[in-house]
Image 1: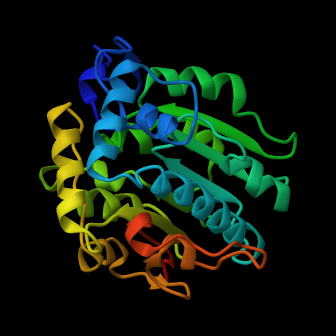
Image 2: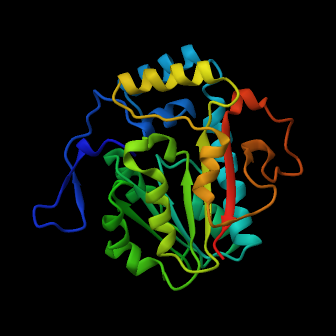
Length: 282
């Protein structure tokens, strides 16, 4: 969800962005992620970037799998225990069942979900697959995370979510594609600023804490292919939750966040290399 060259602003300055080109000659994080999950909606450039990354980190398929599992547990917690009925998922990626709306609406059929991504392939899948229950609503916004106004002012968001009621903001495996120059902390804070008390942030982020040499090599490979990647330390990731109340067990390596009772033994932290947490806005 990072390459804004694939999108161009509406000539009249409107809130929509139209796809310019699939640019299958360049890797895109959503499609690389799809390949690492074993999906088929990717191209040679995406597969090459993923394979090059796995040369530096042979356990490269573990983080995407654990991210998906964390996302499902977090959404289930938010719907079943926190009582959240509205979700804003930015950096959706190519749909992989169960999706956010399927998890949330299994708990609360009236749950409403807005997905946001900027890959035209994700958009095509979203239009075809992201349909929810009759009681609830699902909508998709074709936008880049760095264009906050475009997201917040979109009719899809305003017609689907009530920003006077709590919303769960989901930033799953997306902020490590935001370089420091994009001011990712300010982006997150601005999104949270428009959400009312009782809202939540669920976030996961790659870290180099357990094997800095390997992950810096992975990040360098991705940057050479045109994909910004910035692995951050636990302290840096915790900054995204400033001013919020972290839900137990706090910010942890993904498999340790409220694991299912029947969960298998988790992979080593060094293989997962992703922190995740859920926090409430007071």
